Each structure stands twice: as C-alpha cells, then as structure tokens.
Length: 330
Image (tube, rainbow, N blue to C red; front, side, top):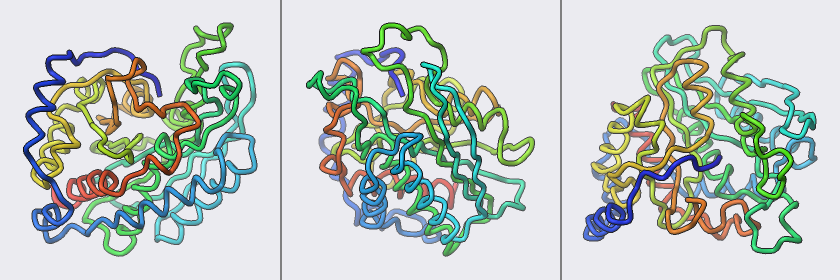
C-alpha cells in the first residue's frame, strides 16, 4: 500500500492523542463488554498464525516460501470448515515480470445471500525500499505486520467461525500481490499506474462467485504493531462512512478507543480500492498509520525491521475482538 494524502493536522493529532490518554483499555474489560453471542478472540492463537507465515520466509510471488505459505493458508481455511476457493492467476508486475499468484478464499455459509467480506493481503514486499541500508533495499522483507498480521487475525476469526458461525455468510479473502508496487529506487517505472493491489484488481473483475455481492467489507492491513493507531482512512470515509462508524463505535464500547482513533486519517491505496470500484461494495480499511514518519506508516514499514518483534498481542486482540463483535452482533 502507499499513502496518498495526509488529512490530519499536527493540532488534531495532539488533541486526539491527549483525549485518549486517560482511558485504560484491557482485554478483561473488552470481554465483559462483548456480547454474549460473540466468541472470545484468542490473541495467542492469532500471534501464532502470524509467526507461522513469517517462518516460511518472504512471501514474494514466484518464490518457494510464497508457494509453501499459500498451501498452508489454503489448508488452514479448509481445516477450519470453510468452503475453499483458490484463484490461480498470472499477473503482470509494473516491470513486465510475470507473477504466479493465488487469491485464497474461504466461505462460511455460502448459501446465505446476506454476506460480509473480510480480507487482507498475504504476500510480502519484494523490496525493502525504505530500509536505511541501500545495499539491502532490493531484498525482500519478512512482512510480519505488513501482510501477516491481518492474515493472522483473519485465521483466528476463521477458526471461530468454523466452531460457531453467525447467522450470515462470511467470506475471508487473502489477496495476493498487493505489495508489488513500484519501488522508490526504480525511477524508470515511477508513473506506472495500478502497480499495487494486483490480486484484488483481478478478483474485482473475476470474483470467485459470479456477480458476487456483500453488504460491506473490512480490510485488515498492518494491524499488529504495539500501540498501533487506526485513524478513519479517507476512502473508507468517502465510500462507507456508516461502516467506519459501526466499527469505531464498537471498538470504543469494547474499551479499545486508544487504538481506534476518533479522527480522520489519510487516503491510502490498498486492496479495498479495487473491491469498492469493481464490485461496488462499501469497504473500510483498518490500517496503522504514524504521521511522525514522512511516509505515514510505522518506522519499520518496507524495511527489514518488519519482523515479529513488532507484533503485539494486545493490538491483535483489539482488532480481532472488534471485528468479531461487528459481524456477530451488529
């Protein structure tokens, strides 16, 4: 993903940061406030799913770790009771390289016409183009937060759906080749359009089910960092403000307001864009942003520091329990 436009001012950051300092949110408080019909999200389990992906190595299309991790994700969704769909596709990268890729999809209650879409990207960045060491910028990264964290949360949600699905259909999609966008060091291809989110672009044109529709979609991207801040992303507010408010108010009710900041954020190129444009599904992006950095994301973003050391169970818990509460109780 890439940052498009910053809409927060320094003043608003100070005001909203100060406004959230007084609240102490804990997992126990969230468990008390959650609906009795909502399963309890297991952050240890989600953390293990993140670690399992990272253990394969960088998940870059056309690589052995990518193949192995894709097999693992498909097997896990099937084991968790989902109806499995795998979209195998050959995509063209910004530089003309042909990428062997897969969108991996698990559906619960596929017969239901009332559906919610949950999604994340499972590939990792082939370049560390923001790494401080120029000699390592052309090497792929682990992508523990940028990719694996969202998938880890959704795998834990899939496990719970397999045990007791809600009274609606849920589709979980792991999109491929999201992070193959033009690197900053490649000046020749800087103006190639739509170089990001290749897997979701493919799916938006050719969904796994003809004429696929969902009431709304929730994208999880970089949802595992300690002290993460989730602002109301620009395209989400433009196309699905009611879903943003539903999710942010649920998080606040559960005691996770320190993560889900009640302030507008920036516009971000991410997988929700093709889903909105291609399928006309209102979608939101839960994504960690940090405006202290010039690129707008965590300091480890697109560097070799995007490792398991950044992954925090409390953050995974906040995101996972909030999404569960939304899909089970709202």
